[in-house]
Structures are given as structure tokens and as C-alpha cells.
Image (cartoon, rainbow, N blue to C red):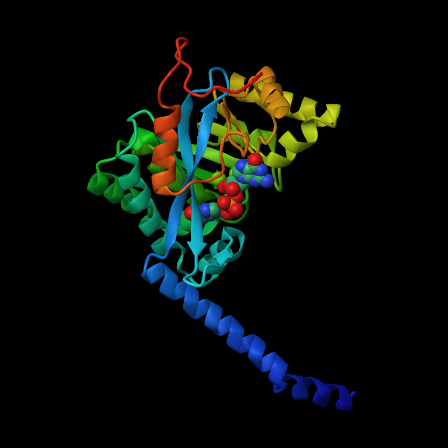
Length: 287
Ligand code: C2E
Ligand code: MG
Ligand code: MG
Ligand code: MG
């Protein structure tokens, strides 16, 4: 037993272990600097009206390209930023830039933005969002904030208050990745949300599996009853697009339309699809 313990102690000073610690510290420093120097930028993934192919808006997705050309995925640096207490600062800088970019687009193009669960604990959140909208001049109704269900697991009351304050600004709220994790249909009725984003995993399974399709159908029909809009995430193929349209989803998002684009590339994309055809449709996808 004693020997085991001393073995463990020895481990702490093992050079490999030490280099792990150094690596973690370096990663933390790099993220702090990236946030401070605004190296993390918003990219924009189009949101498309399934009925007519019109562009409805876009979702801002954080992208971090390091100077050496490597890319760190948001699934790595967002949780890190949350843990290090950098998420509020990162959010504000990304939102400010995204709102400025959005001012250059057609006034009907909306901007969706992800909120981390921890941000709803910040009592200044609505105030900060209001000042960024004010400063950039973006109409509040053009902004939609996406929250996930996990937001309500821990501090329900605080989160509900934060949502009410954001709604009072005229900002809309979407429930992201719906159907994963702690989903409960009863939340749809009780939360003051405007939109449900059906998780990519359902869209993927739908084509292969009748039962998944029935779940999507149920979510869409309940959403309709509750007057909530619906977005299908992760549409990659034309048959998925047609299927999601058939069940009555309003909006689609996915690689079929476009991946997330840099500010310049998104503006170009808007120009390209911006000329409606004789039926008023802006995007033409083979059916
Ligand atoms: P999310 O909010 O559900 O965003 C959608 C994710 O699905 C994005 O991944 C997007 O690139 C990906 N996606 C879109 N269409 C398709 C498709 O057709 N096929 C596939 N396979 N994937 C598709 P991304 O950009 O890697 O972001 C991952 C997650 O990181 C986001 O999931 C969101 O939860 C979080 N995230 C990203 N940016 C931010 C941010 O600025 N703030 C916060 N708090 N979270 C963010
Ligand atoms: Mg999202
Ligand atoms: Mg999502
Ligand atoms: Mg998702």
C-alpha cells in the first residue's frame, strides 16, 4: 500500500506528467490571449426557409484559426472559456462584431447567436446585450439567442428571469439541439421561447428510421400548436431537405445550403442568392 502511494507521488514529478501540465497552462494562456486579441471570430451559417428557399438569417459560429494555420474547434475552446471565466468577454466581443456585420446585410436577415448556460447566471446579461444592440444599431428583433435545455437543469429560476429580461428587449429565444439530453416536451409549453431547433441527430436518423420521423413529426406539430417556429439542423442531403419540409419545419440549416462562412464570404453568398427568381425564391435547390 505504502509502495503504491509512493509510486503515485513519483508520478507527479514524472517529466511526462509535468509536460501535460505545462501544455494545459500554455493552452489556457493561448485562449486568454486569443480572447483578448479578438483572434476568435464569428462565422455565419445560412438559415433557409424550406418553403421557398429564401434566406432567413444565419447562425454565428465561433471560429478560432491560430497563427500557425491550425484550427481549434468550438467544442474544445467554448467549454474551456466557460471554465476559465472568459465566456462573457468572448461572447460580447463576438456579438459586437456580428451585429456590426449584420448591419451590412439585407435588413430582413436575422442573426442567431449561441449562449452558454453559465451566461444566464450573469445578472448583467440582458443589460450587456442591450448596450451592444444600442451601440451597433441592430434592431433587437433581428437577434435570436440560442439556449440549450441543459441551461435549465441547474439554476432554473435565474435562467428563466434572464430569458424574460432578454425577451423584454425584443430579442427572440430559440431552444437549441432539441431532443438531445434533458429534453422534455413539457418545457416547450412552459418556457417563453420562440423557436425549437431540432437536433441534427434526428434529421440524420429520419431517413433510415420511421420512428425517428414520428418523433420529429410530433415535435413539429406540438411546436405549431404552441405557435413556435421550428428549424431542422444538419440538413446535408436533398432528401432530408424535402422530408423536413414535408413534416412542416419552417427553416433548415446544414451543409446542403452552406457551411459557416467568414464575414466576407457570407456577404458574397448573400449577393449570389440575393436575386430572387420570378417566383420570388432566392435559393434554388433541386427537388
Ligand atoms: P450548435 O449551436 O448546435 O451549432 C451547429 C453546429 O452544427 C455547428 O458546429 C455547425 O458547423 C454544425 N453543422 C451545421 N450544419 C451541419 C451539417 O449539415 N452537418 C454537420 N455534420 N454539422 C453541421 P460548430 O461550429 O462546430 O459548433 C459546435 C457547437 O459549439 C455549437 O453547436 C454551439 O453549441 C457551440 N458554439 C459555437 N459557437 C459558439 C459561440 O459563439 N458561443 C457559444 N456559447 N457556443 C458556441
Ligand atoms: Mg446553435
Ligand atoms: Mg444547434
Ligand atoms: Mg446541434
